[in-house]
Image (tube, rainbow over all chains, first blue to last red; front, side, top):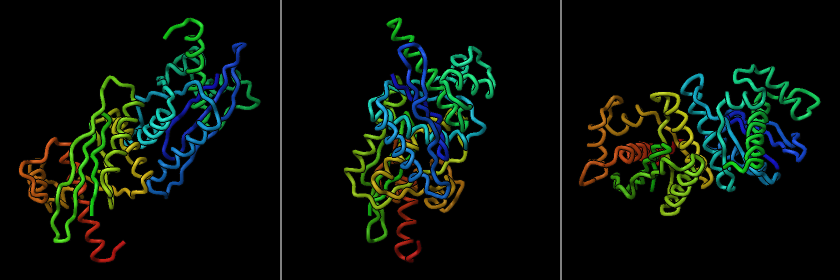
Amino acid sequence: MFVLGLDPGTAITGYGVIEALPDGAFRAVDYGVITTPAKTPLAERLLLLHQELEALLTRHALRGAAVEKLFFQRNVTTAMSVGQARGVLLLTLAQHGLAVAEYTPNEVKEAITGYGSAGKAQMQRMIQMLLGLETLPRPDDAADALAVALCHAQRLRWQARTGAA
Amino acid sequence: MFVLGLDPGTAITGYGVIEALPDGAFRAVDYGVITTPAKTPLAERLLLLHQELEALLTRHALRGAAVEKLFFQRNVTTAMSVGQARGVLLLTLAQHGLAVAEYTPNEVKEAITGYGSAGKAQMQRMIQMLLGLETLPRPDDAADALAVALCHAQRLRWQARTGAA
């Protein structure tokens, strides 16, 4: 079962595809960042982001996708900018018939470390361990995307086991 | 010359298509709002918004499109929500090869009334007059979209006359 996590941004969007293995383990399949050039008009940057996600969706047969549910941002300008990228990503997933789950940052931390207030370093070590990576996941946006993917994969696995909706 | 203005929102997006006539006048061609159901998952609402804009772009052979450039929002949650709709609309316009202009609210007010701090009622009366409408443009989101379209049409007309880029 392949699951995608996304950490949206217009300048840089983190993505992480993981596989939930039958033995209960997880494996990192594909992760990194999509970047768009700062001096390009906004609409074209969003088109690039859409096209890169399309390419990603073509490469992997996904069972589900998830993004972080963000309540707080440093400021409204950041929120607007993240929102624009997030809207494009959600649309693209919907166009591919993928249901999109949303998790709060605390839900993601809780799922990965068992502790809703875990720090960034603690999170990255847990992601490294859960996915059997040789090094810490980098860059930060890709690590955040892998964390959301892990959170969602755990939920999907639990639903499959219990038959919960 | 047909020009589209948009006032983005996930729940309600205003749109206005106007024609800049050769004699210097303007005409309202098509205006209204695109709404999406509140209880539908966000990604599906964004897909509906995308599809409605696609239908609008199919109906009219547009020369240009514009949205308001928003610096301030009541709060970050609103900014995120507006941003998501805005991202989807900008993407859809870019997919159709339409360049998208952005104007600040003050630029729009200045273009319509000659006064950057014009009130809503004053704006609506000017829009009614400029477009030769029998009644005030309604609802507010459609009126705002018509105002952005008028602002952009004036700019495009000026550029055509002066050869400015």
